[in-house]
Image (tube, rainbow, N blue to C red; front, side, top):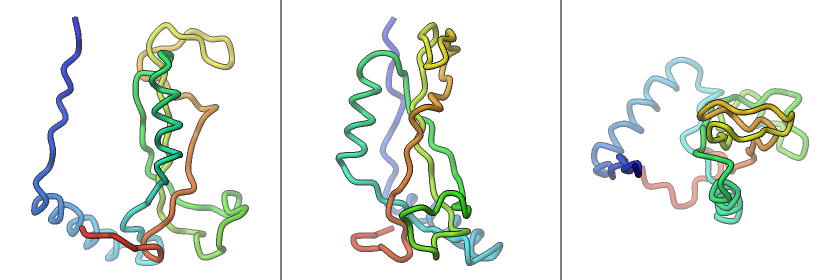
Length: 129
């Protein structure tokens, strides 16, 4: 039985309210860590999509994270403490991971964690929400 994609577009006005709600709460807690958006180049997204489409993976998990000292190599020092996201492909059930173990449904592929998007603020060209 084929799964039906249950995703639906979000109205722009509702999306804007969602972004604003996050912004209000995040900046009231700790404005130094606030990140409005993270932009990833198409090449990076398409490379992940290609890997997922090859059959061993069944999706993509997005973790909310924060830059720490150990994650700053090649990045500006002002990234430290800023919020970001990690992109992690997930294995389909019954696949074999890099450790030779049979996987559970939606198990993280911890050998292929992606990051390094551009943070807004400061790189906010094109941001509309």
